[in-house]
Image 1 (tube, rainbow over the protein chains, first blue to last red):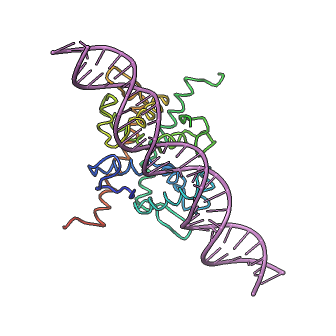
Image 2 (tube, rainbow over the protein chains, first blue to last red; image 1 turned 90 degrees about the vertical axis):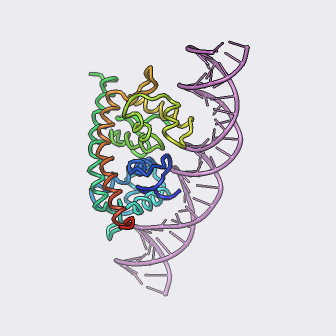
Image 3 (cartoon, rainbow over the protein chains, first blue to last red; image 1 turned 60 degrees about the vertical axis):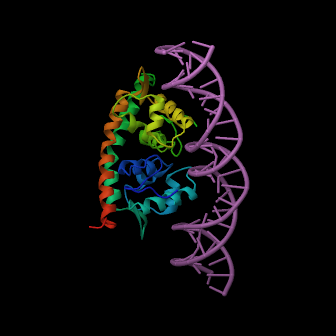
Length: 115
Length: 115
DNA sequence: CCTTGCGTTTCGTTATTCGAAACACTAGCA
DNA sequence: TGCTAGTGTTTCGAATAACGAAACGCAAGG
């Protein structure tokens, strides 16, 4: 399975729509998480493994290859870091983070913790 | 594997951080895509299958169960539809769509189509 | 009845991920 | 030199997730 790229057919869509490539790429386990962990600065492979408890190194390296091929991350002297494009993506994911917080509040409302 | 919920440990994180639950939930194949297809209005199961070429019905129903349990979608008379929470999520994903478009432009720059 | 269309489940096959170990390389140090 | 410890990375069998096609149940229409 090739790394999804905008403008090309991906799993689930032959239209080449960029969002389809993005959803194929990020709908893979740990892909979003790796981005999340890199948002604050470069990290080495073993540091990434430590932060993502339960991720196996084989998957980490597969994701690193995919994200690198996509131009979202790049190797640096300190490990891997977000490219300019990756930093923009990180910004674009900020609303998702905020949404997750409101999600959590609603779940709490349905199952309040004692008081 | 239980459906990830904010405030509870999920695959890859015991912190209960909402964003971790979100990344577990959406880092599953077709999860983002199903949301995308529902953004314009309710769709039935077979219509969803038709729009997501290549998705198998068994996975569709698993995703539908997960998204329903998460309060993001709900069954309606017309099939499945986004809840208020799901509509907010759809909004939160808009920047991702815009990012994907810039992503596509950058890829074009690296490999221009003739002119 | 019979067909058609829908929602849904089942099950054997294939693809992806896990998990742990190993390999390669570098730096520090006796 | 030789050892140790710390990286980055690959390998491979086992476990899990997804595919793919078929089937079941049900309601509506002819």
